[in-house]
Image (tube, rainbow, N blue to C red; front, top):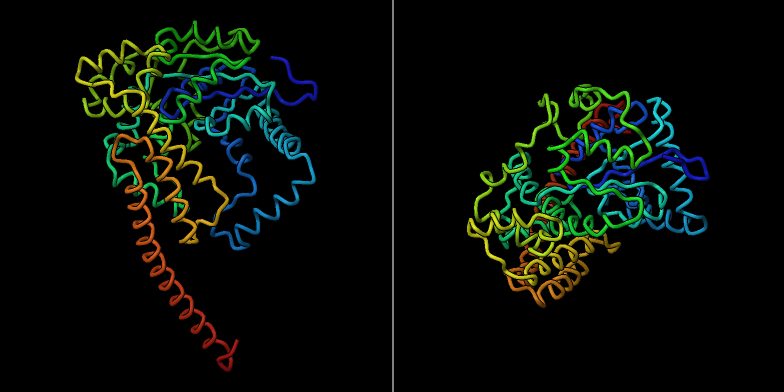
Length: 396
């Protein structure tokens, strides 16, 4: 794989949803003597959010964001960000003694435009997997309750956490992967210099698929170990990546159809509603869709799926909003706006009433947070008084 004219480090982005098999594919590529595939750098997500800090930052989150934005207006932010990421990738490659770095980070679907602006020349690998199998893995590995997608109170609780600027609950992030991430990656697969890999083909024919992917990167599969799941020490030392791969001795395709017994009919219905019949067919999973339909799943129509997408887009736009999230009036107005957008054509129980539930939950959590804050303040005052009493004369 050739490097760009600026002699930047050779980088390839491996894109795929969480629980889609990206750790497996990255590990197989890592076995090549010229390729390094560190477990989930998340670098592009951090750089895209540069300047947006936690609301608890002691310097003041709004001040940090305003100051950095004003400063960066005078420079080419893209080139500066590219210089930083080049330096980071380059140093990692130098330390590893490799030539190409595979940045495998789930949820890069959230920053695809940023990726394109920063590394337009870098090759991409998009890994697709049957959405039903992804959902089954979310359920069995992380305990994501799929039925919560149809529960108004669960959606309201997620929105309340967003209003409070708390880390998005795992269920909201996981469902957003299916609702927003999957169609984004499906559309991205047609981008130039992008290879599409299907998990089902990878586990059924790992050698052939790996040879194809490596050829697309400009490498021959020479000098690679015959044992595909050995040398996982670099994964053991990290807290990121699929830990299940550490337990496996060989690649097998038993996980391909496991979802058929792991998901209930109701859960299959939720996945079908979230992803949509049309996208399932476009991705090549029509046979799996037919199995679900024979089990009792019904096609509720494109409008249901699009309504989910509208709701999650609104939530994500609000989460990324620059407005002060702790201004009750502003948050309420924003929630009402989201409710209007999501409720106009929403045939399910996700209308303005859900947003009102979220607002009430947020307000109750504010009261709880205030009580905790007052308790902490009392403890600090008591500690300060005690420290003063311990000084000579009882004065600081």
